[in-house]
Length: 166
Image 1 (tube, rainbow, N blue to C red):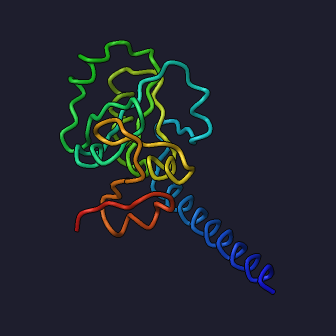
Image 2 (cartoon, rainbow, N blue to C red; image 1 turned 90 degrees about the horizontal axis):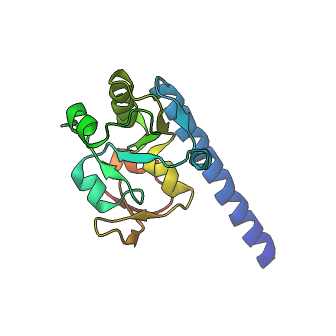
Image 3 (cartoon, rainbow, N blue to C red; image 1 turned 60 degrees about the horizontal axis):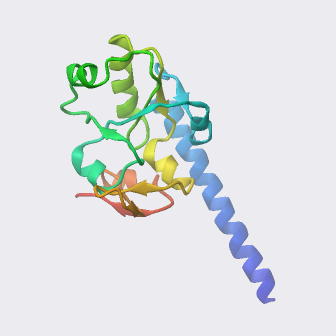
């Protein structure tokens, strides 16, 4: 009897996660124009020696970010700053944000500026963390916290501690 209950609970959890994943994919397909090639979390290994640019705001980045990423922001993004710091337009660049919308817009600007190998992380840091990948805080220490921007957006993070402002 107890084992049946455990199986039912586990099955329910799997069904809920699958449904949430499908809803998240639907949101991304509706929101992304795919003007910047997308890479899934699993496909990132296909890139060699790539630059990782976080297009979220400083507060989000300080809460957590992909290891070895550089925060370039969105609201005050400067293509001139990127061009100055990273003049090699042939180097592979992975851009990301919370789910991929802001990073797609920044990726478009990078492509327009002549960068040739720009990729957008499908599902952003939410999908990265949802797949149990490590994120680090402002001190480069592993953390479970992810800034979800708002309570509304926090529902898309299913793995990790949700941090947001009201």
